[in-house]
Length: 126
Image 1 (cartoon, helix red, strand yellow):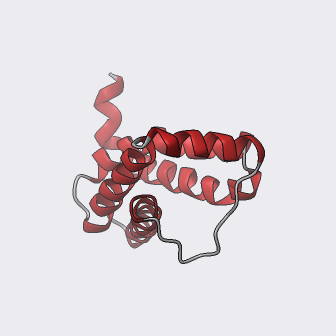
Image 2: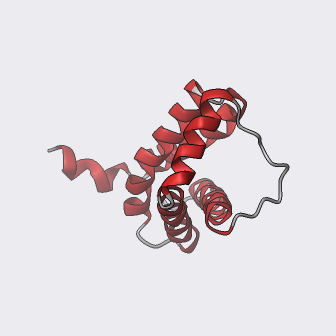
């Protein structure tokens, strides 16, 4: 469960979540800004206009990222991330295909880490 491979994946995923979560909360972008078009733009605008949805998602991403980076409650953090990563994947699959590769990276890393911690989740299914 704590192999070097698992540690590297956990830290990469945690740092990515910290970056993207903080970018939602603090409105900074170090990378070139991705411009959403069509339905994706309408969807993101409607989430932004609520005033809280993107902040809540950003807060969860920062919290989960911190837990992964500091190696605390990792199993809990991965389960919290599961529905978020599925929604990231589905958003990019159906509305914004240029971001699909990054979304697939998030969901694959989450799935690998859940698999590596599976003995913790096993009692949930008995």
